[in-house]
Image 1 (cartoon, rainbow, N blue to C red):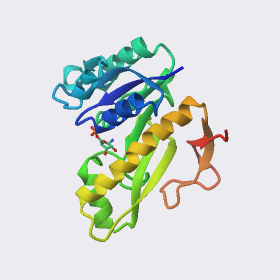
Image 2: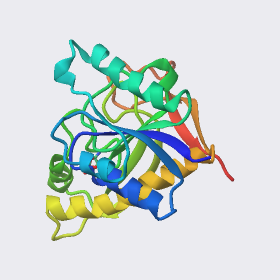
Image 3: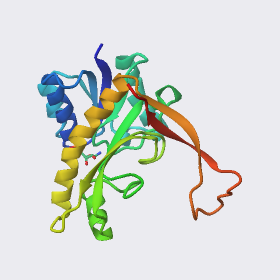
Image 4: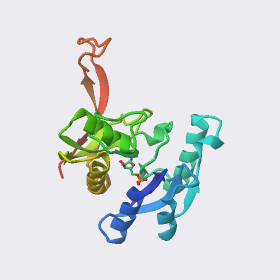
Length: 227
Ligand code: GRF
């Protein structure tokens, strides 16, 4: 059975288009049941319309708070997914309150190697500008489960991209986006094959204030199971 997904977009929809193209070429077995846009001007909606995928616009400004906004988004997801499949954030810029039944069922892709250059306000060209400013020699992208913080949930997979001496933020962004186009489908294939498991692990962040080596914090990480 095709993997049922709902795709969330905010802007140009290149990530959505890539998923649609792969599906049409028979390279990715997903059933895109709905696209939800956080903006009524997101140009990415055109790709859904061209592919006859239903589109809903849910804008945070129309809701009292994040809880009410998120409730509407997941109500629409529930209607289409009916308890199975995944919610795929594709250039989606709103932070959502993820309900319990969607824990580790919401995916995001971020254009850096998390935990570098991520978190609130790290989106678009800013991510690559910061990577260049810091002088890193390798950047890349990360597919991860989303939780209720920006770019913080268990990492499913990462792809590295070299930073070249003559890169500017646009050229680096372009190269990272090419890696993203491979990483997202790869992650979806792993999930469809039931090869991703999330486990608890003790985590001791060095130099973190208040960290007690005798009582490490427990975090969740994702592991890839062998075939
Ligand atoms: C990519 O940089 C991706 O990592 C981030 O959004 C950008 C793509 O946006 N999450 P879009 O798919 O063109 O709207």
